[in-house]
Length: 282
Image 1 (cartoon, rainbow, N blue to C red):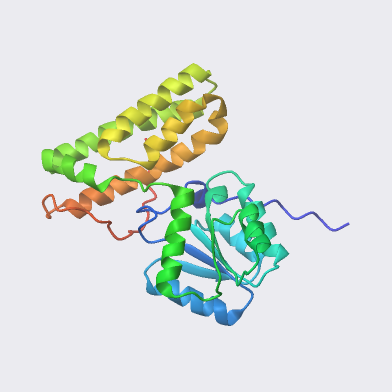
Image 2 (image 1 turned 120 degrees about the vertical axis):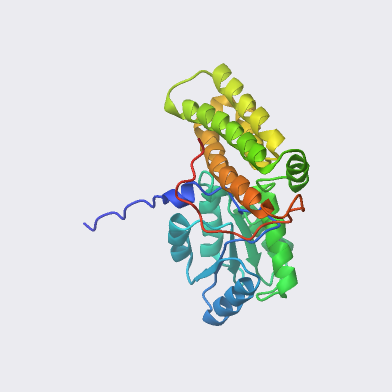
């Protein structure tokens, strides 16, 4: 009897992925899926030309393997319907817990029938374009639309950060960020450490949201409020909160670095920098 294949286990980088580093409007990490080599090259080149990290896969199984190893914000599948394996991949991804189950899914498929469009939506695709190789602007807008639907707001509200930076000098801003992150990290890690009742989970989650919102944080307080609203789902909702805290710490650091020497100039979105392995939510 042939041995059963080992189940796929997401890498640590995938488990800690909290979505686009600078929100859905910023650069996206995209995986392109199509069995046509010419389309893989053309679509990947169009994505790379816009700046984000892009890669390609030729088959749904290969795409699923890669998604378990490397964090991506979106999957773009180009195919001519019907394509049962691609629809099965979308359903399999949507059945997974976050963050894998939250990946934005965009279909590039010359669909003409309402039934085909319903099949795409039912499988979990967020958006579809009726051409295999759309214009770059249309592809970028469709990706942003799909990313907004799945990942929600980015890590920071630029207007609130601008106001905070105008009021605090750089050391005070760094101290405020660190104090709030320390409180949020300690409360979140305490929830992970051992069994606690729904009331304690709710109180800790509300404290996390209250500490982080004044920093201009968006995604992390939203994750905390989701946990406070459903404390009985701690096992499902705590991992996204922890991942959002890791992303927030990195975003706050990048925001302060971008402001250094630039006064209180608005930050429209710093370019991605290499991830720091020392980033922790505490």
